[in-house]
Image 1 (cartoon, rainbow, N blue to C red):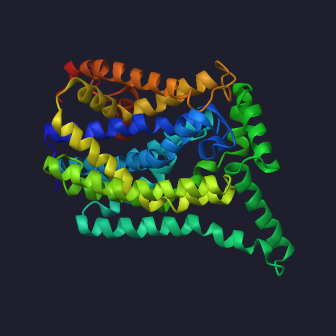
Image 2 (image 1 turned 90 degrees about the vertical axis):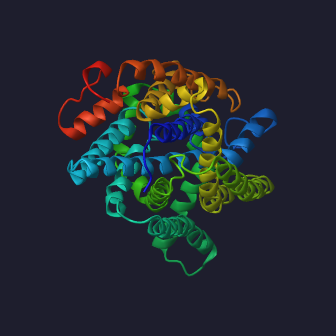
Image 3 (image 1 turned 90 degrees about the horizontal axis):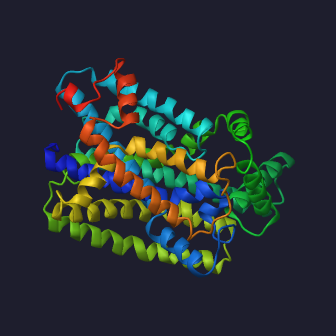
Length: 421
């Protein structure tokens, strides 16, 4: 079982800091433009020159990798909380389920009232199951992770079976209607330069350039149950990634216990597998002229095994670098951002929606793909600038403190002088 000395916790915090910063590199497109902009460069945001290069860089190295890394870290952190509660005989089941239920509440509020791209509700629902694996060995966790990831791959990929039925003349009218709806939704969200995709772009532009009341009404009325349907769609994959995190935590990988050279070898090996595979999928999308089904398969289905490997590769790379400069000023600030990952994630949503939505600065759909990185870098700077000074004075980030207090059914000490660490 992994131990949690000060240096090892710092290593875990640094990886978490990179994850919460890195996930913005993709989320920025969902903050700043129509949904299809996230997946398809031809749909919106620029598909030539530097805009295309930014999309290609993100697809190969960032897209789903940082979300995967964030999910892995959530699984590891959840296990750490459970183990600490078990060591103190502090009602570990009560602590765990209270944390997940309150996280679900945060996620629903985040989705309905701040941003539609919430992952907290998905994490909370997946996290409800993690307690059952708390005492499992690394080997058992690894097996279950592979099972869940395989189920996720098959579940998402099963849509292709429906698409292949499109030309079947024996379909009933009801089956044909259901299939046509699925194809329209796929074309609208993943396609480009089609009536369906252009209609979806116009819908997103009109909605998010409108008033706060219009946006909330859409989410709370028409999209009210989307957090739960999204969770069902992503549950096997998300749970598999969290189990990977639990296994890597117990093995000592995420806590920095391995020799530094071993992390370098893992990073090189995993990137050597994942990068060429993602490059091949990138070429396939370009050659298909960004066909919606090709984009869907390249982004959510065929890339998934390689994205998981590259998420672990990112963890290995960051740990290798961190172990060489654990107490350095940059590593310290990234680690502080990681300790406040919950707050930084939510604050990012508040800041970015205020910048881009109609009730704020109204820049939604106005900035090209490459130009959006100026906002990403600016938000990274804010995370690095404010997290450490806050934690020098307080034990927790603001939302971490609120989550902890709600989960423990009492206000927790906030100031460093008021309680022992």
